[in-house]
Length: 622
View 1 (cartoon, rainbow, N blue to C red):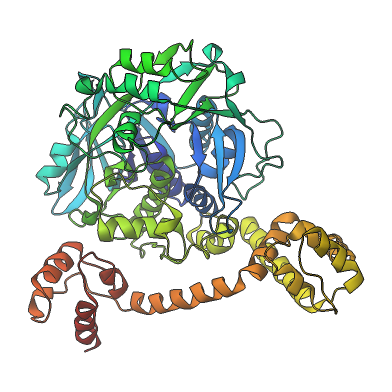
View 2 (view 1 turned 120 degrees about the vertical axis):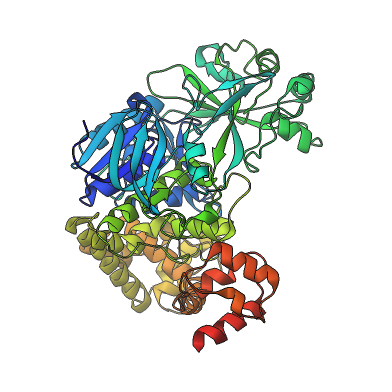
């Protein structure tokens, strides 16, 4: 049935698996995507949305690198919002509300139109390994599939166990069976595994809700989009709504705590700190009289609603009773109750920075198998694993993004260097160079790298080069063109900004925090220049950010250069730390476990002191 040897076999068809398969196939590898259910490729298991704080930056980065998530999100969006616009541009984060069914449909269509990509439906139960080298996978039907590299993206399916109150049953997702056998196969090869848990809220009938008593949350007036390709911004949008829990709701929920798997010991694994269940919220934040509930439509043509903020594994009768006490939910009808799910994961310190395992050559892990949570985190890992699996087959160097190059670089480095004992979620605060890693410049940062890999075509590269050239030309104009006092002072007065007494360069006015491009465009020489040079708002925004935040950007670039000096000091994988008597026992233990690839990564390992780095620097210098 499977003739010959595949270059890359990807196991799992979620966000990580889909991106991994697309990347490897688009780079020219003969690729096979094996999943337990071909009808659920790209399915949104939890909330019907992409992006958000830091996650939106990741989607933009995936798109700039030639991944599909940004395109799929744009084509299936029902609402677009740019979050955190009251803060600085390093914090701006795009988010779309998605049509759940359309999202999966478009993913399937895009994958089927990808050359070099085959599909097969079955459960993978074993990894075929010979002398430390992966040779393929074995299906539940006993069919061997031979491959040069394998990418595992198993999500929450590895020995998945679903909990609703005191009831539990095997499953990887509502209505789907768990994946068995693979954990035992990996453990037999020497891998260390653990258990994590996540949860999801009830899905309800939107026709049973009273939206008139909720707060409407419309999309942006002028919606943008994720992809740097020619996808179209939304013309029509659907609103979300906000309502709140109350002390009455909390009291009702507490009546079920004795039957909650979180509190009665049935669940002992760690859940996501930053996305707690409703019972966890009212237990940990007992001083809060209410919590937000986001009422999110599931799509254009369905009445199903996602109750964001009400994730729970309480008994279904308690869920129903408590939710009916929420304002606007008095007559709510359930489509299905919320539940928690426990699953196996493999601590990511067992991986190199290419996401290849240290134990088995040619075997890659991506997504929740590495202890992460979130579609965006999974998709970015899948993209990187797919790229590196392809490069592995060609015996080419791994593709690794640095912490100052992308949020994806921060994500991978955090995982392999620090590990995680709770579901890892990306935040802007995790990136020390977030002023450089903005959502608006992902194409400038990464398209040239994607072009070198063979994922971005020459047209995308030319578009980015043109964007950079026009931005530099506009900045030069604003720094060299003077304004007329009589023209500028009325604008400043309208913004409650101090008037000027003499003419100066336009960039000086533009640098003021309360003056934006909507004000500067009122200066005739500026509007004339924009029209003559055909400069759109995207480029104008780039110029504005670079002028206003030039000091911060320069400072971060200098710090990044210092970091890169340590990046350049490589540590051989065979380096023997035990011979260095000046290193502490803890330092030797952690360095031997992580096996950092360079001095910069070594410095970020928990427990490694500056004195340890000095010892290594002296030894490596010799």
